[in-house]
Image (cartoon, rainbow, N blue to C red; front, side, top):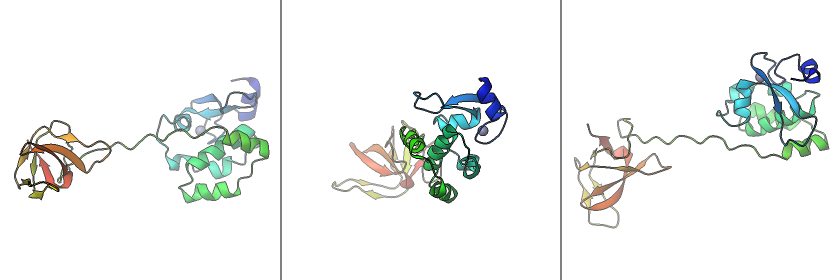
Length: 189
Ligand SMILES: [Zn+2]
């Protein structure tokens, strides 16, 4: 950390004011000389999208956004935008004023993708299902568009989880691959 930054920050995170594991962060893009700030590691992981955003960790923003340091203003603005589903963040964003140059800087970089929700398939009893499992139907199912009736108690082996839909799996019944709702089955064994 250079002397100027050390003097300005006092060695503390310029966002939450903690002094543990404080590192230098260059608020992107990297084409500015005034984009260095001191920030703590735990917030940095959320800033960079390595950790899911936890709104409670950012409750200091409505105060920190009034920093006189443009790089801090930019980061506060970006984080408030990512958090604006929270009413306190939306309120803070409403009253935050950035001058034209600083606003252009803030808008120059798109927010990182938030880490996606992990899709977990569970049977009717909450047991976690995996590809290759065997399941038992807990209800007789009529299969749309076919004469197949998948009876209560039918065992379906070697199921496939339907990606991105935790409520569906695929399995073979009477020689046909069908989609079955997880709420109508129980994991076997
Ligand atoms: Zn911090």
